[in-house]
Picture 1 (spheres, rainbow, N blue to C red):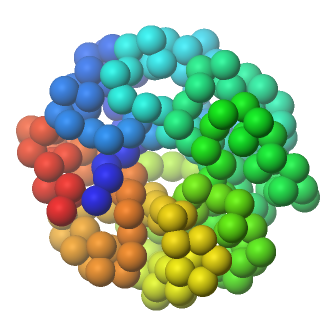
Picture 2: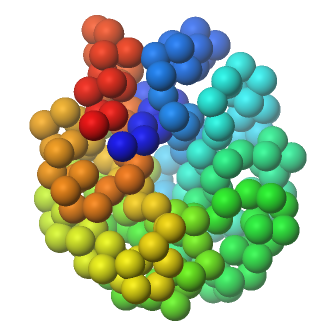
Picture 3: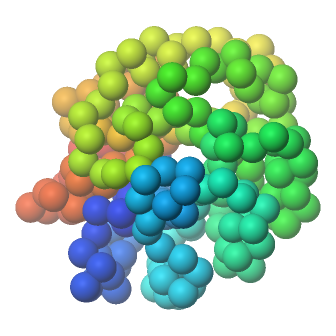
Length: 213
């Protein structure tokens, strides 16, 4: 299991230290939540902060766009060469165009599904994706309770992935901890995003390690 701590739960007063802590703690990716205050009822960070994160990080960036204008935000962050940029299928009328744009920029494309969105909605996009991110909370805020029905949804998605693109990863974001990590792995999850579980732990390295099963 790959672990991508979300810096949404970091202390932005000491962001340098908190990013170094997860990198030194053995994380696999650094999950960066970008919200525009329109697609979701929250605003987080823009290019100035993400540029600073990229300078500090010793692990690849995994940028999650929760925005209305995906093209605009991809242009803001593409020069940082993150490993992944994920965008919500619910916010995009031309997903193939966005996927092709990311590929051309040398960035692995990923699509995000909100808790209510069925995996079948992206059935004919799977062959072109490197990852699908399933939200196990409603997007916008950290620290929410895990939505249990997403486990069955993960199993359905895994069946579709095995049919169309077995190399495509499944990522889960929201309410992940050491209590549900084995269930998620059994359902077919490859990557977990964990914010409050990691940054709220007494020992960040041990928290990350407990998810890398």
